[in-house]
Amino acid sequence: MSNTDTIVALATPGGTGAIAIIRISGPNAIQLADSLFVSIKGKVLKRQRTHTIHLGHIVDNGRILDEVLVSLFKGPNSYTGEDVVEISCHGSPYIQQQIVQLLLRKGCRAASAGEFTLRAFLNGKMDLSQAEAVADVIASDSEAAHDIALQQMRGGFSNEIKKLREELLNFASLIELELDFSQEDVEFADRTQFNLLLNKISEVLKKLIDSFALGNVIKQGVPVAIVGQPNVGKSTLLNALLNEERAIVSDIAGTTRDTVEDQISLNGINFRFIDTAGIRETQDVVEKIGIERTFDKIEKARLIIFLFDSMDFDRSELERIRNRYPNKQLLPVCNKMDLLTPSEIDSLKEQIPNVLFLSAKYKEGVELLVEKLLSLVDSGALSGDNTIITNSRHYDALIKALEEIQKVKEGMEMGLSSDLMAIDIRQALFHLGEITGQVTTDDLLGHIFSSFCIGK
Image (cartoon, rainbow, N blue to C red):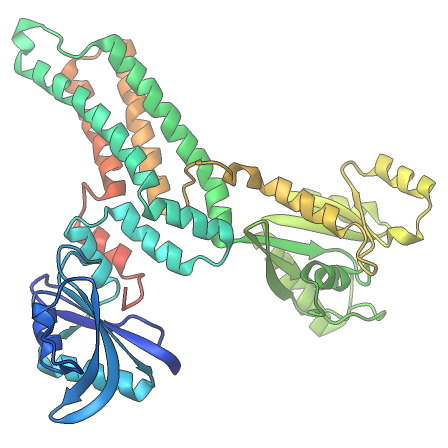
């Protein structure tokens, strides 16, 4: 990649559509656009004001390729900080290809994945965590994931990190200054104030680290495995949760021989429900494979709904699942509650703590199950202005920064010299700087932006 090149890429998805947008960025963007754009009013793009739109035609050697709208963004007031031109053309794949190829012949270079956003970062239009949030906004498929990514893109998280880093940097400079006067045995940094700052930074870092569990769930969705013996209503429950006939339902045991998956957004959080093959001893080869896949899906699930028939409950099967997966949230659910008497319900409540009752067939009690699922995810943490971490790179950097802060605190308690504490402070600053991009390497940038789409 080179910042001196003028790059071009399709900024909208490939294929046929009503319109397509072709984005150009770089020092020659406006000049190149001028060479192939003919305004219907005779305008010259380089003489026009920034943030204006112009109607005309893209012309190749006197041949009109398309009637287009050209949007003009002059640097530094653009997404990349450079001159940017966006050509809105008709969404024919042929037209898109012809215009892009024409720009390449005129001197543009095809943009690499994420290169527009990389240039925005390099030109100071956003920091690294904001740049990563751009990809998260594009990939968000639920309200909660969108809101968190948008808050990060606006700088909510990075501003918090920058403030902590700046405060730590101020004290670090005083500690470093003490090293220059080590022979005079003087202290420029107030140790009491410094200790208070370290405690404050530790609390903030711990809060951000703890938020990652929820953030990861929001970003990736919550896989929920519906397990139980054959014919207890697993497929009926899946259909009731999704409010559609997604899985085949019959009275024949072993109907579901493979896993059936679909997802739904509940209160802004994506849940991916997995209807699994009934767990039982069987000689059927195909059904055996389905049961093996059931256990594979349980391994990957975050929550397990153990569904059982109110008329035929086998407690040993519930305990077998609980013992096999002790670290997973297991929710016992009794189906066909419509067939139970109040005394039978009370008896099952005594046998099985926290059991829920429902009738998947008549969709009774399904709302209570949804409420329980949401409470297990702690969706209430999404309210307010809480900063929630969703990026594993940020999570790793926060953990490392906290470890260094703890070392500094221990050093102060042990009365270590300033030069030894300064080493750990520098490391903490380094890890905080990695998050916002104040500390970067070419390998890190290459890894991050390679995951972006080409036109972004």
